[in-house]
Image (tube, rainbow, N blue to C red; front, side, top):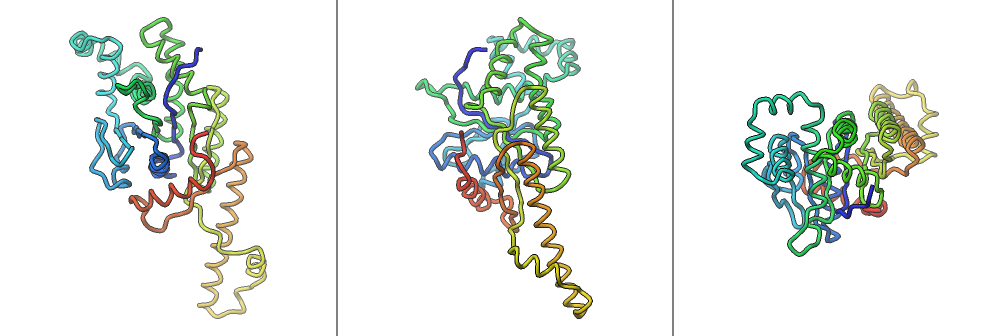
Length: 313
């Protein structure tokens, strides 16, 4: 496939509940602070990004939420209409097709159509030009669905090529695949927690993404990691203590300290397992005890991201 110039595309995904949107916000802020024009694309999600930038609610129309940052929460039906207008050119002609009940039924039962309307719209914004001829956005960040749905979504361009070759959709599907497989222009950012289930599902996702689509994970983020309170010497000392020699209150405190120590050890072990399976160095972000969905929290996590290597590479 020929190289197609585009903005940089970040696809942020992970198991539900790992903090994908939080990481998306941190990336967007960090990149904007470097002077990048950033568009954040969400896929028909319960919108929380606005609270992370002290902005009003983000809807299906692109809006500026901070200096150098724009965002949109895609409505698949509206996105499909916009895409149809783009490829069919004439709005009235597209409206006539869309309102045909047979076409409507076909769209509803055809796998991947809504996914392509969202993924395709996000991809299209990487090619969108400013009147000056430059790309409108330097970076487009897709706050993708949880990993199971993300894998299905990333399959859609390939499915289009397999089941609908030589159609009006083929050209864009080919360009999207070329971008996804170009590590200089596209980065899959996998977010996980240092817990057994998210780690296991993240490893499985990475393996399927590679074997089924030939796409690798570019960046690994482990979110909400507890700070290590104990040195090696302190851990050895805690292991030696027996609760039987202490009063009930002291036993409770000692038990809590040991639980915290074991959790720290478990997190570090799981991070090493992720790094081993994905052959990547994890970028570790701390657990936030407050400001989890605030602009202050976004700024703090962005600063932590910046200290752990380049954001785009």
